[in-house]
Amino acid sequence: MTHRIQPFRGRALLGTVALAVALLGLSSRADATVISLNTIVGTTTNTFDGLPLGNTAGLIDQTGATYGEHFAGQIVVEGPVFDTLAGTPADPLTLVANPELANNIGIAVSDKIYGDFSNAIGEGALSILLAQDATVFGFNITGANDGGTFTTQFFSRDGGLLGMLTQVTANGFFGFQATGGDLIAGISITNTDPSGILYDDVTFDSVGASTAVPEPMSLVLLGTGLVGTVVRRHRRRS
Image (cartoon, rainbow, N blue to C red; front, side):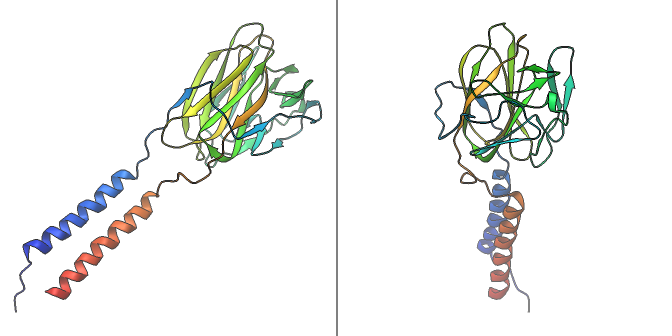
């Protein structure tokens, strides 16, 4: 007995395949863009009040964030005056401290956090790992009275670079916002201010995984399941 495939059922099968392909296309997250927006307001602020002064051996834990020199995968390049960062952070983001106490991050008088380089407080790299992804991030700068610039790099949880902004150093508040795609999970800051700069009142929101997008493999399984369902129905009806 010869079975004929009904046109309608064939179209249903093709439509399901097309749906699966479309879902796979949606799995590509839009590239995030981080913009400068000094009016941002965070829900958590780290003030560093009451922490021991001087360089710290290791990392500094605060509410919702941990502070270190750089991320695993980054390379601290020691120039003649300032630290710079090269390389790509590893997946997942992992903070690393400078093994030399004199070159690691620390806390200055008036409860400010800093990066260090060869006992030059405020001239080294400072990196922050957020406990939950954030849409906004900001901090106050103090001690910026000799010119220069500071560069802020923003990373997703898997170490991908979301954006990098270089701005003229000035005392005051600097804010940033992620406008799409992956959110902010980590931040690295370096500067070329001749006397170095300090950071205070680091603020951010915490949105966690509430904006997570289905992973590609989940969408593949979903599409495969839909196709399988239609094929089984076609066989039973034939």
